[in-house]
Structures are given as structure tokens and as C-alpha cells.
Amino acid sequence: MKQRIDLNNWNRKEAFAFFSTFDEPFFGLTISIDCTIAYANAKEKGQSFFLYYLYRALQAANLVENFRYRIIGEEVYLFDEIHASPTINRPNGTFGFAYMNYFVDEANFIQCAQEEIKKTQESTALLPAITGENVIHFSAIPWLDFTSLSHARNYSFADSCPKISFGKVTEHSGVQRMPVSIHAHHALVDGYHVGLFVAEFQRLMNEK
Image (cartoon, rainbow, N blue to C red; front, side, top):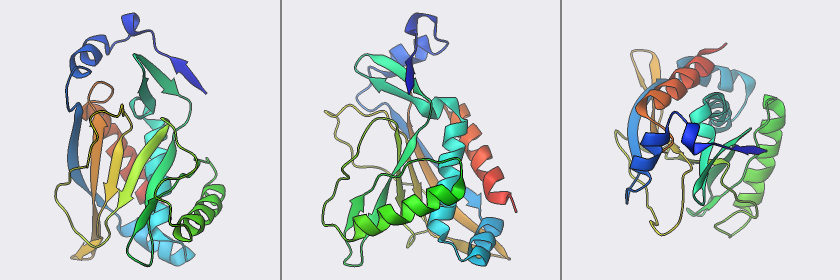
């Protein structure tokens, strides 16, 4: 479900009008997340760390309203929920885009996500059967401890979905950290809202 935003009475009216005219309206930054507790929890549960942090990142994004805004045509809509469209690596070195529904219940999310991963890895298709605007584009680059990241972009394709990428977990003095790159459409999201997302994500990663 989604609701249309009344642009004339929206507190982002001026920002939306300004950044919507940009050839490249996306901005991005890279932060480092402390994943010491989260990594230990995932290993203790015998759970995929990828799905562990993916669920919490999606949960955090759903808690920040601006991450649920999307531009459709000339209008802005607020979705009740957003889902995940992550890249899934295959054993042969290729990858496919998957689609994973968000569930408040973590066990439901993990079960459905595992099924989607299996289906994507057994396929040769690049794109999933289900697509839409109400997704976050996720990707994982677990081989690299990156400090910045850019995305391939087709400027003729209308896109306002945030893009979140995760890097390699490294350990220093007993603390495990992971780089996270966040790109968002500036007509919908500011640095303040990215800060809210990061705070929620770190909080959820710190829960025992």
C-alpha cells in the first residue's frame, strides 16, 4: 500500500523541486558499522551473517520514513513497507538480482530469503520475476574493505530507490567493523535521514 504526497503542502517541497531537476540527484557516503555483537550472535545461532545484517538494515530502513518515499511519474508516494532487492553471488562468479519480502518476524524473513537465494543461485537470469519501486537495492562486496563506492547508473531510467552496499568485515583490537555505503535520491532524502538510518541500523546490530 502507498499514499500520494501532497507536494504543495509537503515540507520537502523546495528540496524536491530543486534536486528533481539534477542529472544525478543521488548522493552517497560510506560509514563503518561496529558488527562485533551482531557477528557473534549470527555465528552462535548458526545463521548466515549476510541475512542477519540484511534483515536489520531493511528493518532500519523501514523505520525511517524518508527511505520509504518513491518518485513515480511526477508524484511522490510514501509506501507502508519497503522490501529488499539484493545481489546474490553464484558459485561461478556471476550474480543475479533477487527480490525478498520484508517481514517483521525475522524467522519468516530468513526462511523466505533462503528460498530466494537458492532460486537465484540455481538460475542464470539477471533480473527477478518481481520488481517494483518499493525496494532498497542492496549489494554485498565481502572481499573488500572499501572506503567509498559508486554505482552504475542509467540516467534515462527513472529511479529513486536507495542503494546500500556492505563490505568486508575486519577486526582491530577485538572490534569487528564493516563498511556500509548508502546512496539516496536527494529530492527525498538528506544526510540527516541517512544519519537516522545509520543510528537505527547500529542499534539493531548491537542488540543481544
